[in-house]
View (spheres, rainbow, N blue to C red):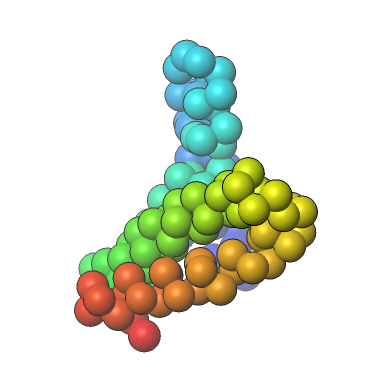
Length: 115
């Protein structure tokens, strides 16, 4: 229970800091980039570092990086399926989920991380 309270408080503080940063930056479209994902990742890494040590936090960071790269690949594939193949959004996203999984786990395996 205590972990959830710490995660809530730490996550809220970091979300607020990133929201202020996003409010300062121009164009305003950058504000969404700084909204949730970086702050949640930092809060999670901080808790992992505190509870489990450096090695565990490093594994978590590697998994987050692999997931982010896989998400970029997934996004490109979805855009191509939507624009070039003229597929519906639901069809394009469902077909691309396999691409995301292969990319994420492939990056982790090649990088020597978790399997």
